[in-house]
Each structure stands twice: as structure tokens, then as C-alpha cells.
Image 1 (cartoon, one colour):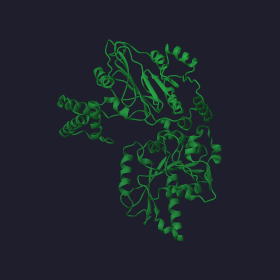
Image 2 (cartoon, one colour):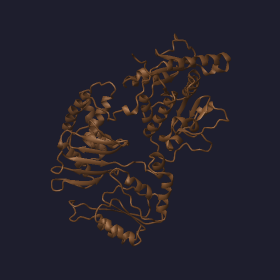
Image 3 (tube, one colour):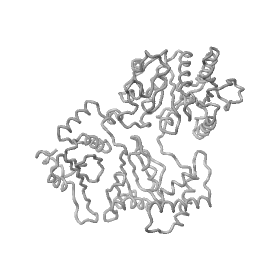
Image 4 (cartoon, rainbow, N blue to C red):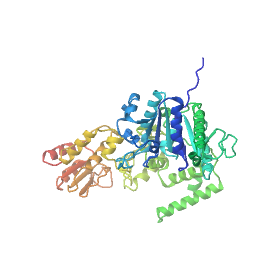
Length: 559
């Protein structure tokens, strides 16, 4: 016995272009969908940091209870289907959920750093709750290739792309179709909606796509017949949408892999790299900008002689050029991850295995070094600006990059799998206590206020935890509560804290095996700091004999 396929329940109304009635179509579609099915329908509007327009569909007496941003800031994971009515505003069976800015005097800017990629889990939870009620969700979002729309490409059961007959809207619609053809299964999800249509018949010359519905001109709505025509067209749109299969994929089905490069591009990159490097002569006394221009000119000339292969879904010329510049002037296979703000840590276990930590998950990438010498070359590029070296006599080293990232490298014979590199990146946007409370949900409001009070009262605080648990992040956050008139001495093994105090002294330990004759430990620096008249002493990492000096300093009245 065969079971009929599930029907679509999550619809995304989108377009590359604004100002063409996308939100109007989403609102009308949601209302008609509820009227047709009798089931609860959520209308979720993702106007990120912009005023809501779906509120125009409500009368003045109806007030929005909770916006999506407020839902995200709260304990969204504990919300159940039976609590939806008390959480969100329902009007004629449709739950209206604007992104933010739904109250007079409310700012559109959240108090914390908002990342689109972090909204996906809370949105997915909301979609599941309405699915439990056998209801529907209509998401209104302007399309671009950013994390949230890309998440919805997979998660949505159907995509309603809105366009008009006026340029450049048709060209944008065809571009969306091209984009869909590059992504597996997306083309089958699309239902095209031609808005502001003069001719809404199926034989209209303005019709561009086979599976398409038309909505009449808004100017005709003043007439009674125009309103009937609009309602008929929206009902027809609902009829076509309800027969579409549920093609959405849950985020759990995502493998989380970093984008794989096709074999033909890899082979072409290696061939061109050897050609370009062979043509470059050693140039001394030129600036980085001049060197980059010279390398780019050589790459352009080589690609003109040997054009890159055409691969569907890839801008081969741009990808190859970026790869060669990274290889010749940057950190090779690691440069891409250094640019990615979602990557927190990069781990190289020999030439064949490169791992990254992205969004809290460890991922084995397909990026590889050519050989062991290639890894050693990248290590030397990292250490050169820091004035550090690594060799058989001193086979391990700690350093930091210009952007503040912390680097540890270790080579054979200590590293049995080949040279190893670990790069800990830090957020370019400082993390605040509001981020910890509302964005990461890692601390309660009461606990945050308690820690703030402890800093103001000059209590001694020890931050302890496992690797990658957020010790440095919490210490950075707590440092923001130090009063500006206090003198702070910061002691670190490898400088990584981002402190903003005016009266700040920073000390960094000196490793054994550097060009200097003697090693200077954190313990030595703690003793010296006591003579610098500090109001506060911050020790970045305390994992040795310096703990004794730190405890003695606490007992003598230092904070």
C-alpha cells in the first residue's frame, strides 16, 4: 500500500526586488490560505532592521504581542504548540509575526550583535510548532544570498517568487530561475507569481513561466469587480500552492560540509599555479600593493593563454584567481577560512586533513596542502611578522596574527602526522553581556547583573572552564564593567584579550627558544605587575606556578 506524499505547509514569498507588492501578496495569500483550510497560519515577516509593513493588515485596536526578535531573545526552545496563541497575535486565524519594531518608540536595532545564521534554529523551531498543529507558515523575505534566505531555500516546501512585467523585474526572475537550476531540487519548489498583471488569463503574452499565477493591478481594487477579481486570483494561487508537495529538508539533513571544489577546477588550479610561480622573479623593495598587482597581472595573462574550464554553478575564473592569490600571497588553503567570520577555529593535522570549527561544530574540509613542505611554508609565513621561528631545536611555537588570532604550530619529530597548525580566531565585533544573555542564552539576566556587581565591587574573580568553553570571551565581557578611572595591568602568555581601558598596561610572556637569551614567564610578570600600582590585575591564563603569586596578590588587597 502506497501513501500519498505530504503536501506543502511552509511557503516562502520572496523576490530579488522590493516595491513590487511582495508583502501584499504574502498577506493576501496567508489570509486566503486560512480561509480555505480553516487551519492556523503564521505570517512571518523578515524585514531585518526595517519597519514592519504587515501591521497595516491589522486594525488599530489590535496590538502585536511578540515580534520574532523578542521570541528569539527569549527562551524560544521551551515554547510549545499550545502556547502559540498566548505568545503571538492572531487575527482571523492568522498569526502576525513582524521581525521587530512593532511598538511606538521601539528601536529597530537590537542591543546585541545579530547574526542571520543564528536565527535559523529558532525559525525552524517555530515552523515545527505550526506543523504539529497541521497549520501553515508563510514567510515574507526579500531574497539575497545571505544565511537566512539560503536556509529557507532548503527548509521551505515551496517558494512563491513575485515579479512584475516592468523591467528589470523579468530579468531578475530569470536570474532566480538560473540560481534555482544550480541547486538540487529547488526548481521544483518554485511557483511564479506575476503581480500587477493587466491580463490574468493563462494565455497572457506577459506570462513567462509554465507554473505561474497572476495577481491583478492594485489600481483596479477600488472597483467592486476589481476586488472580486483579486479574490479569485488569490484563491487560484492558494489552490495551486496546496497541491505542491512538501519538498523542504530539515536542517538536520545538512551535512555541514564546506563547499567542495570540482576535480576539474582543482587540476586546473595546480597547473596554472606552477605556471604563474615559474614566471615570477624575486622582487625586493616593492610594497605589498605593488606585489599584488604584479601577481594579478601574471595570473590574468596565464588565464588568457589557458582559459579555465566551464563548470555549472561555479564562477571558475573568479574562484581560480582567488585561489592563486591565496596560495602565492596568503596562507594557501587556510586563507578562505580566515576570511569566514563563522569559522572560530582552524586545525591542520598534517597536509591531508584540515578541520574547522563552524557554528559550534567540527567539520573536516576537503582543503589540502600539496605536501609537508607546503604546510611548513605557511607556518613560516605566519611566524615571520611575529619574529618567531620553528625548527627541530624549537619544534613548537605560539604566536598571533595581525588581526589578533592566536596561532600554535608544532612540527616533527614531535608531530607524528606532519606539521600541525591551530588557529583560534576572535570575533571582529566585540561580544557584550547582552550577547551572552539574548544571543547565546549562556547566562541569565540575574546572573549577568550579579557578575556586573562583582566587578564594580572589586571582587576577585576566577574564570575557569574547558577548552573552547568561552573563558576568554567572558573575561573580555567582564572587563567592560571596569571603571574608566582604574589602572589595569593585563598579563598574557599570548596576547588575545581585547581590553578598552584608557589606563592599561599590557605584558606578554617571552617563550624559551626565541631570539632572546632568557625566558620570561607569567609568574615573573605577575611579580613585576605588583610594583606597577595596579587597581586591577588580569591574568589571561593561569596554569602553572604563577597561581601561587596570583593568590598572594589577592590576599594583599590587589584585585
